Image 1 (cartoon, rainbow, N blue to C red):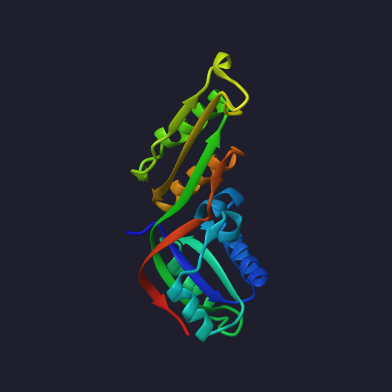
Image 2: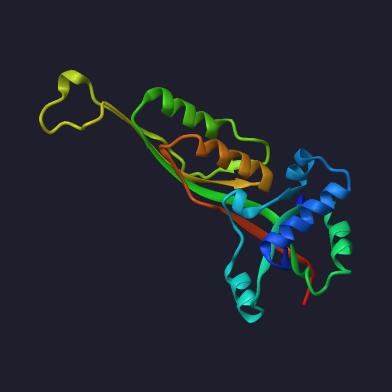
Length: 199
């Protein structure tokens, strides 16, 4: 069973988001519960398009709302939008098999480097770092520094990617964002089967 679905609805984004928020509130869900069950791609720096997705949207242009919804909640949402075909028309619902993002860093402070490396050695369950993640450390003592010596006494460099379950990957992505020296790309969704198609 997939934890989340990527749902695309033909609707103005602001209207679609407002509808979802109102619907969740009407179900008695607190803001914290809502944020756990529905993720908005722009809030989390998630890339929602793929080549096939771009092609489908080009063939059926229009305003869309894209959301990532807890799979158990999705059937009730599909039922909720059925009476509103002109304002909220389901285009597609795909299973999310996982997510990933690429990162790299160059750090000149030992303590910061240790903190960043800790992110990748204490990953949540269901998340892994790529095999090409191999931190390289260079040190240069003061007494050996001359006119052409490196500007930094300590440098830690690395690159790689993180992949796994969506929510856990987002957690790692957010932890990386707390460090200015870590450059991260947007989170890419790995879509699975088409669960439900629309018009």
